[in-house]
Length: 174
Image (cartoon, rainbow, N blue to C red; front, side, top):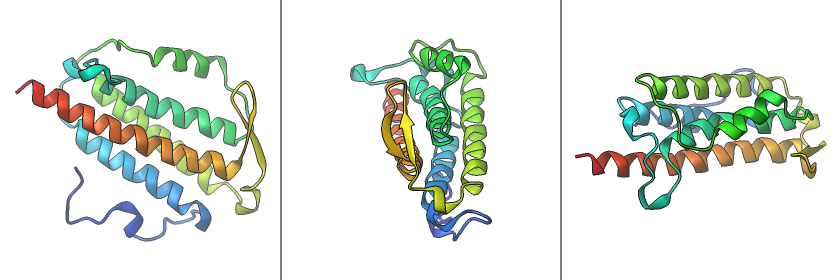
């Protein structure tokens, strides 16, 4: 976990050049990155595909965290998913091929995705936040702010699930 003496990201003040209405989204993504990085430090790659009580594996959550941010921010730009994004979505399903550096690679991928999301948030004019956006192939109606807030919420939900699953599978190895 992050240093207990360091306040959570949202309590550290506004982020430079971040639109005020998007600060909470940015704070949530940065908090998720800090917590994920700390939790995955020294996480055994051999446990990535473990599914205690049938829940989603840590490996699934690690892949999904990056993938869903990428997809939701694509929809926020009013773009369709690319073939590469659709292939990445299909690849999120376990089991994950595991190598010694798999955990570090997946954490780094999520960190890069957060950086890309922050860049997009900084470039988002607040006046556009209520513009309509379509989600998925069915183009389910949402708004730009709806997509961005959901991206933060979805990220924190999966992070929480990952943290619990990681703790359970680690404790079963002791």
